[in-house]
Length: 295
Image 1 (cartoon, one colour):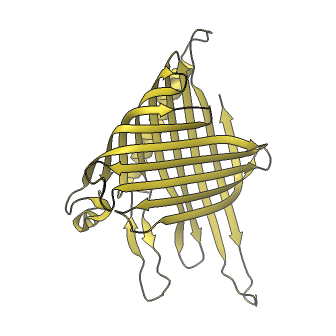
Image 2 (cartoon, one colour; image 1 turned 90 degrees about the horizontal axis):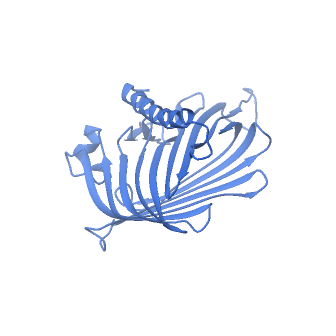
Image 3 (cartoon, helix red, strand yellow; image 1 turned 60 degrees about the vertical axis):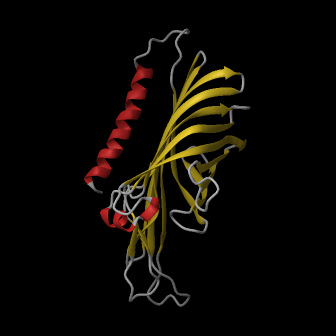
C-alpha cells in the first residue's frame, strides 16, 4: 500500500483515538456525559479448489476481505455528536490474477444542537475515497486491464450545515441547505482528461449543493440488523441541467450466526453523471468472523 494511503489511515485512527481518550479521561460522575463506542471488525474468507481431472470444470480461487467499523456517539444537554468510520478492503486470486472485490474509506463527523424534540441544527463533514487502484478488468486475453480509479482519484469531501429530522432513534434525515462538495482527482493522468467532473488540468472541483441524507439503522429481528443510507446531492448552479443530481443508496443486512460468526449482504446503487451516465450497482455476500466491542 502506498505511503500516503497509510498516512491517511493513521490520521483517521488518531482522530478516533482522540475521541476515545476524551471518554477515558472523563471523571466517572452522573453529571458528565460520556462517549458511547461501538466497534466491529471482521474477516471474510472463501476458497475453491479442483483436481486437474475435474470434469465439471472450475477455477481454483481464494478470496480474502476485511472490514473495520467504529461508531462513537455522545449527548450532553442539547448538544450531540456522532463519529462514524468505515473501512473495507478485499481481494480474490484465481491463480491467474489478483483482483479487488471491495474497497472503501468512509468517515462522517456530525455535531448537532437540539431546537425541538425532533429537529436539530447540524454541521457535518464527510470524506470518501478508496485504498488502492481500481481497474476495468477485460474479459479478452489480448487486452490489458485499464486503470479507472485510485486513492484520492476520486476523493470526496462534503462539508454541510442545515437541519436534521430525528423522529425515532433509528431513523434520521439531514437537509444540508448550505453544503460544499469538493471532488479531488490527484492522479495527473485522470486530471488531464477531466475525469470525475473536474476541469481538464485541475485536481479539485468545488460545488455548492443541496444535500439530503436519510439513515436507517435497526435490529429488525433477533440477531438481524438492517442499515440503509440514502444520499442525494443537487448542484445549485446547474440545478435543472443534466448531471445536476448525485444519488447513492447503501444497504447492509447483517445476520449473526453466533457471537463470532456472521453473514453480511451489502448492496450499493450509485448514479453520478460525472462517473457514468447510467446507474452503477454492486453486491457482496460474505460469511466470516466478526468481533464486536461496545463501551
